[in-house]
Image (tube, rainbow, N blue to C red):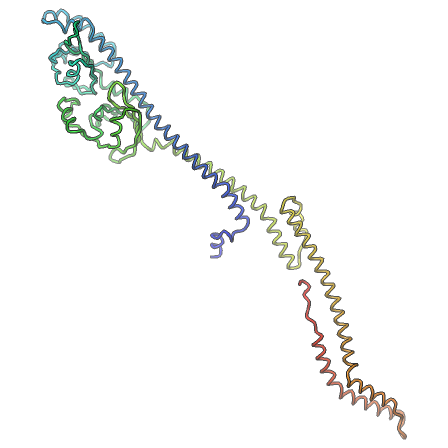
Amino acid sequence: MKLTHRLLYPPAWSIAAKISAALLCAAIIPMSFIACYNLRQSLESVEASEYRKLELSATSTASRLDQLIIDIQRVLVQVSSDRNVVSFLTSTTPAKRGALRPNLQQTLLNVFRSNPDFDAVFLINRQGECLASTDPKFVGQNYAFREYFRSSIQGNSYISSILVGQTTKRPGLFLSNPVRSDNGEIVGVTVLKIRGEDIWAIVNALPVGSHSYAFLVDQHGVIISHPDQSLLYKSLNPLPQKTRKQVLTDRRYGVDEIKSLNIRELKVMVTAEEPGHTSYRFGIEQIPRIVGFAPLKEQPWVLGVSQPKTQFDVPLNRLIWQYGSSVLLVGGITAIIALFLARSISRPIRALTAAAQALEQGNFNLQELAVVSRTQDDMGRLVRVFLHMAREVKAREQNLKQQVTALRIEIDETKRVNQVAEITENEHFKQLQKKIQKLKQQTVSSGETETEYFQRLHGKVQSLKERSTPSLNSKFKIQNSKLKTPRINPGA
């Protein structure tokens, strides 16, 4: 419990631990705040860069499709204004058309062979009937129900979505343009069909990495190009009832029902007018994905580039790892330096503590602090002051011992003098002296010899001594107890 308390209670830490913790916090905390701020800014920058990369990829492919459509439109306008085409559609008799057909057919074949992406070139009269085509399957078919015919017969150029051909059952992009006579009357429609597979190839050729893909949606949000062909002609969101009815009536996609993928997050993509990005979840596992998209300029289509969020997060995670590693590395170096500095500061303090304890116990050795005292920093000055203080204490202790010894001698001498004075100045002792004096003055009795007289005198003195001894002893004991002095502690 005591160890746990010391570990969890900072005031109980050693000075080395406190200094190490303080230095480490002083270095790591500001650096962590700066690193977090820089990391956040860097992540936002990298994230914006990754989004921008997806948008640029989508924009580049959309521009390529736009250029393809522009080039084909130019070819289509040339075909529509070709003299053989105009003459063929303005002819009123079958014989005249039969005479013009070889030249017309050669013109159509030349156009067809000029680009491998072309699937067919054909002419339609005002009634929607195909009169001439590079593919004989089109001749005689009526395409009055097709939107490209209805739009161009009104005098407009038209570009369809990628439709499934009613005749060939092959997907394709239909471009149509009105054919006008010399007086400006619309006499028919020229239609140029581009292979749908070639459009798909352009979209799918976008290098987006593994588990990523590009896809194309039309103005209704229906997928018209996707690497997974099972998703073709499915809408990103449910179509309005009117639009769905019109699409099915036109047999635009060659399917009986337009199923929806119900990806609400991609609704912003359908109506996009500028490049952008968004995130969504797709599939049974609802895997999070990121999509960058860009609209085409020549068509109300939007091209999207989708990739998994895990792949999108790779550079972000790499950046986080780099910042985290740098903080850990600097923190480790700072911890080592802090520990070294703390030990260098606490070592003299521990030596001073041990020296103070030794000084208290009386076995202090000045040589133990000699090395530490040679330094010129604050600790060195502190040690030198302590050594000077220790020498002064030792000198004062020796002086005090000498004074105590002299005092004891003086006290003993005074005690003896007092004891003698107590004895000699006693009234009983004085009376005894007087009696002895009288005895000395007495003469020898007649009939006694000098020897007998001395013995009688000696006996009286002995009896006097015996009577006076108990009282003197008690007085001596009382005087001794009074004269006893307390023992002086040399270390006090």
